[in-house]
Image (tube, rainbow, N blue to C red; front, side):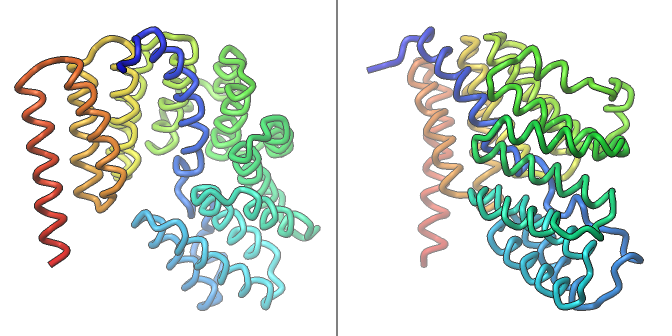
Amino acid sequence: MRMQNSEFRSRNGRRQVRGWLAALALGWAAGCASPPAAQFTDADWVSHAATGRGAYERGDVRRAAEAYGRAEQRARALDDADALAVAAVNRALCLVAAGQASEARTAIDEALADARVSPQRRAELQVAGARAELAAGQADAALARAAEALKSQPDSLLRAQALLVRAGAELARPDPAAATRALTDGLSDKAWRQLPASLRAEQAALRGAIAAADKKFAEAVARQDESAALWKQADRLPEMARALAEAGRQAQAADDLAGAADRFYRSARSLWAQGFQPEAVRVLEEGVSVAERLDDEAIAKKMADLFVTFKAEQRQNEQ
């Protein structure tokens, strides 16, 4: 039975909020807190951290978490509080991405317990902890940790990260208006434009989630398209493809079925080419569902041809 569009819109607004929260950690590159090379000179620690970053950039968050765990162990051996803090931040973000928020919070709290941790590293730990709290569904705890980080008057980069978590927590309550206000607390539009493309991509995605929560689906499409373009600019192709899929869902909610089908197709094709085959198939299935509603032979054939391509490549890889 086909879902009525009004019902789809209602569910889609709620799902968009949940989807943004679930992907929150992926919006931050693991390694975002990695220190300048000159600060940490221990060869073993540097090697483990580099392995973690490389694994994350390949999309293997579990291996990344393991590598950062080895960096944590090396920092304990060295009795280096800041090295432990940096490794803990990055491992926690990987753990959140892997769905292990509770373990992430444990790693953060261990590092925070050392009074020698510098104010900058302490703020980074609090923001990462806020991410873990939000992923665990603890919006109030996330807000408290973000507030602690902001007390240190962090630079614009860390402030933006804290504001993104704060806005996400407000959206989870749900309070879309408070989420919008949080994004501009002490950080102007000009300041946002000067930040790395990855942070601007996450801000655009969050604004899309806010628009979806307010049932402004056309705006949500535009924000997700903006997010996809920024992820591409940042050379973060998995996130680009996922933002395209979100744009497709918002286009579907806005009754732009042709636009939805196009975005699902591009997302699925990109995910498959990157090696995320199961996810690509799921996105393509969404596209096929939209194509069936469109009753457009050309679009249906396009979807079917891509599915055939997937199957052919899968058989070839299995040989």
